[in-house]
Figure 1 (cartoon, rainbow, N blue to C red):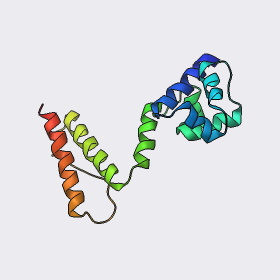
Figure 2 (cartoon, rainbow, N blue to C red):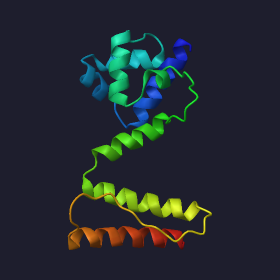
Figure 3 (tube, rainbow, N blue to C red):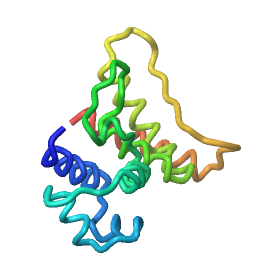
Length: 145
């Protein structure tokens, strides 16, 4: 992989996570213009910093360097979604689960009955149940448009 390709990948992964250069720089203890230099291909981080960046970005080093593997791996965009999902509270996860299940069912060509699942730990209170019903209603209305 060429220096420019690595620079483009560093920028792509950071932007997919909606992080600024300044935010990344602060996390790894460098100046924000250092990140700019890396992303423009004028310079490159050292090996330890690459590992640090992979940790921050939620990617493995193979993805960062564009090394193909035979297993089904996640794109940087998909990995960004996983990181965001893990950061959500239980309510947020439940909402994402409802929409994801609904959309998966919509594109599925099986004749299986509709299944709605939501991630939740503990007992549901009425407010939470109402929010899930609102999310289902929202998705259903989108489907009918």
